[in-house]
Image 1 (cartoon, helix red, strand yellow):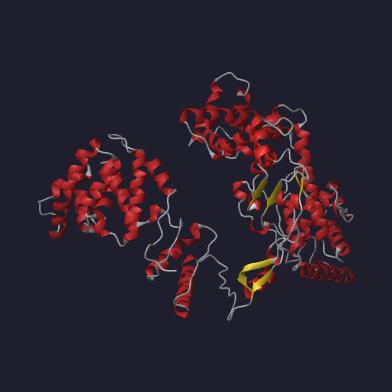
Image 2 (tube, rainbow, N blue to C red):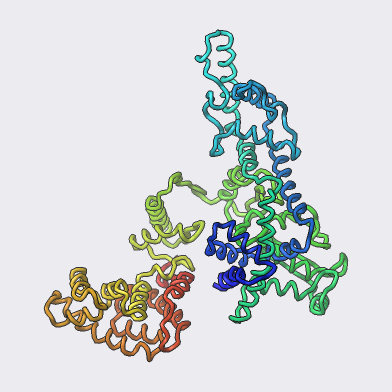
Length: 614
């Protein structure tokens, strides 16, 4: 929210005559006058400003920034070409280039050979066009190896000519191309490197692109300034600001602050765990803390990590930092000694051997500091193999959440039957993949413990409480009132709900309830239910402006019999979490922003089932 506020202030500065007005005007035009999109993009960048802020300041004060940025682009492209050249299968170079020349002649209207197919490319930047021609020749648009050899890719049908010798020659070339493609099917690394080359940007910016970048440099610097003002106004900061403040507080390595000198005297040993998930800003903080350290002065830096476990790229973690320190032997000016630990103490031998067999094919062949690619390092099992099958795969090659959930349920049931006292875990890539599984396990009566897995808003008790809250905050919210009356602590049937909704369609629903009460239009049970809940709801609306939101919602819920309608103790615990959330809006007489309440609720998770076993 604060990022968006700072972005809005930045864009609104267009109306002022400032040095960055032209930059804002350019970017608005670049985004087709979509102010909302520009604000969202600026807000997204502000959330990651620790990655770019120093570079943006340098860019605004540097005349050679374009050359420096383009040299980085060129360097990345050159590295990709070098990896591609190393990935070419041995013995097929001459065959590829000869077939490319043949195809180029047939595809060229003038019959001349394309200059990009006349020679085997090297691994220099100027060979990029040749490699790109090779990628187009061997791969489909989707990046798979070609399977068909046709006139469209330079191999005319032999039936299109009458001369027998020419026909035989064309047949032979098609046959050679088919054999080449068949041989390449297993060369996955070569295919991946060809695909990667296709995705790389040009090594130079166009003048228009550079103008846009310069506008961004100006605008982002201004946006970062506005964000500091917004932080000060609200009395809040984010984690990034705290981390950046820590770095600033230590000063530059050449000019340390008094704080840096004091810490340098006090800190003798630093241990960093999970170092593969360290971000650039965190690494900079460590470098500032150790800036004065020297070999042999008795101070130690101990970095522990496993680059194969790096999963936090979305948090700006840079596994390349780990690889760079390992390969160079230095962290800043501190010389490091690398130790590789290979013994696995967690898993039995059967699992370790299975992983050793298959993961070299899953992870990249080689490490790469620039791309963060990490190759597989095999391990040795400490524990002996257990009896039975170590790993069993149930492949679902197409997305089928329901079938997947049923299979998981069957595996859980089978495991419980085989080992009633055993422990079972279900691991998934992210929470969204558990949606169908959770529903299926509940339907089968399989109780489970899940920490921060189920969103609180998805629990039935919370949905009912949310309907009650909405009905109180906005008495004209008919959907909320209907959901409230349908909840188990009110319990109107669908037929009675239909009657209530259509009795006074132009009025708020509480008026419809009053009109239906005692009128005989409802079923006998429905009438009894309305007579019970109506006085409670009327009293709640009357007292709403005199009570805190939590006290009002919780009091009505208890009066309506909400606690008696839940399924288990976990529901009561979840309800308490919701009531604690409402305390954040406890300003008597204030009607909270329901959208803000929804946004906060999305970030909360249901508590584990207190009655579940292992």
